[in-house]
Image 1 (cartoon, rainbow, N blue to C red):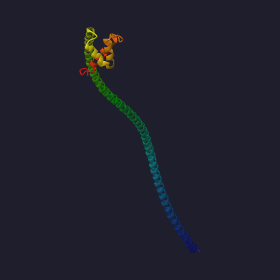
Image 2: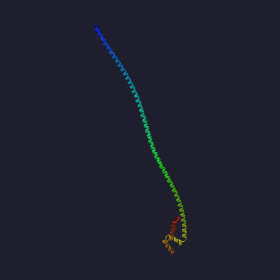
Image 3: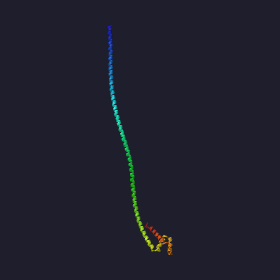
Image 4: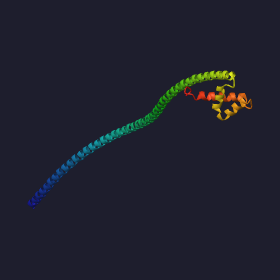
Length: 219
């Protein structure tokens, strides 16, 4: 019975040792698993820290880019304002240029009109000078004619005073009024004084003047 008890004890001891070894192995495995999990956790924490750092860096970069975008927007608005000002200035300059071109055109027309007016004035002055010369010549000619007419009046008066019954006087009256010359001669020869001496003198003077005014020298 003692041997059987020892054998049973040994068998139980062996079983317990095996279980202990198995538990040790399992504990080692658990320790390894725990260490591995701790390592993975640490790695995960490191990765998370790295990711968080990258996220923070990305956020900082995003904020920087947003700041740059804001600066670019401000610069763009400033450039747009400058562009609008330049366009407005360009439009103003274009309008001023058109106004100046219009004024230049008007001035050119005025200058052309001045030149035309000057040319017309020159022609008018030349015509005026020519007309004044012609008028002067006509005045001279009129004075000559008046002088000749005065001379003829004096001559006629001398002839009339020389005697109303001369042959030249009767011929002059007969030339002017041939139909009445016979009456004038007959009346004069018969002593009839129905026609006044002033009427005869006027007709004779008229005949002499007509001959003078139709002469070649008058033409």
